[in-house]
Amino acid sequence: MSGPVSAADAARLRDEASRLIRAGRHAECWALLAPAIEGGSDDAVLWNLAGLARYHGGAPEAGLAMIERAVRLAPDNAGMLGNLGHALVGLDRIDDAIRAYRRAAELQPSDPNPWRSLAAALRKAGREDERRACLAAYASACPSDPWPQIRLGIVAERENRLDEAAIHYTLAIERDRDSTDAWNRLGVIRGRQD
Image: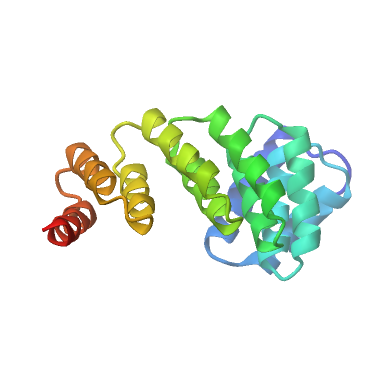
């Protein structure tokens, strides 16, 4: 298949390529998508899938270039921006990854994935003040998720701000009474405070 891909062919390719990616069969996925990509397809999802196949199949730079093309074709797709961020982190381009994750979080503020990825990238970059701000924004955007409160508690605990850590762990428990991580961490803090 070369040249433009019909809508029906693109849908079939997307489904099959997604299945192959999930199965970890990256070489097969690339073999399936290469004719459409090399033929100049303008389907952002195909470029994204091809990029994932190449990136995870041992050609990370080529994969990154394909994911970047996908993002140019669909600049408001938070999932593709997340994939771009992951590829950039893998190539140690942390500042670029942070920009991709920030944009993904802006586009889908109630999705925890871009927030978690952004927090991890900020930590890797040693940008703790920005990470705290990110976690606070995440906690506000996803009020039922205990994860950001637990992470804020861990940050406060590392900085020996035990009262603040206890507040964050308590807020995490209020969000999820079954959060054993928050309960355990709160117990440790209370033991240290006694």
